[in-house]
Length: 58
Image 1 (cartoon, rainbow, N blue to C red):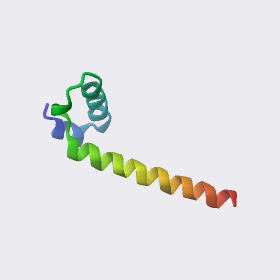
Image 2 (cartoon, rainbow, N blue to C red):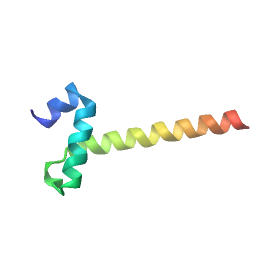
Image 3 (cartoon, rainbow, N blue to C red):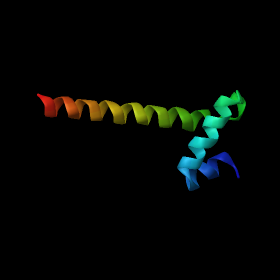
C-alpha cells in the first residue's frame, strides 16, 4: 500500500511504518512533508495543553 494511502486509511499504521523506517535508517522512504506537518501539529497541541494546565493551576 502506498504510504499516502496508508496515512489516509490508518494513521496509527502509518506512524508505526514510519517508526520502522526511522529505526532502519530508510530516510529516503519517509513522507517528510506529512511527517513535518504531523510533528508541528503535535507541538502546537502540546503547547495549548500546557498553557491550559497552567491557567487551571493559577
